[in-house]
Length: 128
Image (cartoon, rainbow, N blue to C red):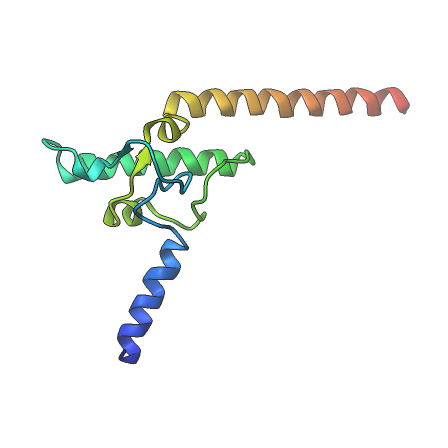
């Protein structure tokens, strides 16, 4: 392989990590009915990409909040990479990243962390 082509292949592999694009990109397991937004008929490419962008945004919102997410995806993955590789997922896996579910998880996490801070603040005030 020519050095430049080897570089391009190596870079693309690193960008996608160790993802097997034939499996669910979220859990990396086979079986079940895999859905792929790029194969939806009657949808524009922009609409298909928007599905990946929403998933990507919601995933990063959870990561940024410090919530542990059960996924094999690397943090540097982009929505465009998912789109370009025809990423697919199990409906059940993808539902965990629906905006409404992510909002609920973020709200519960914030409430939990706020409650923890309040308790430790109250404890430190009593000891002083």
